[in-house]
Length: 67
View 1 (cartoon, rainbow, N blue to C red):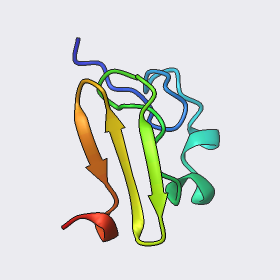
View 2 (view 1 turned 30 degrees about the vertical axis):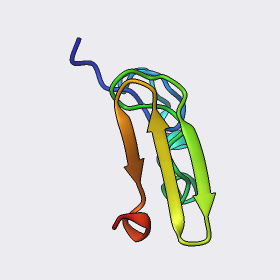
View 3 (view 1 turned 135 degrees about the vertical axis):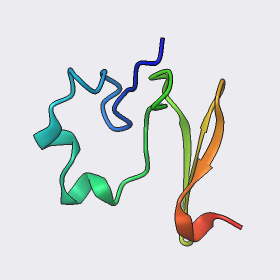
């Protein structure tokens, strides 16, 4: 149950197409899926950064958005 998931496509790390999910464009985007459970996250983008919230694992934020 310690499986990790891609935060951009939601597939397991082994199934993820690294070329499509790990490039310059996606490195600037907020995560869309939880890395722990692959659930779709609620993402809010602001001028100062972003926050992403998983219903089971809580909230994560960009470095510029953390307090």
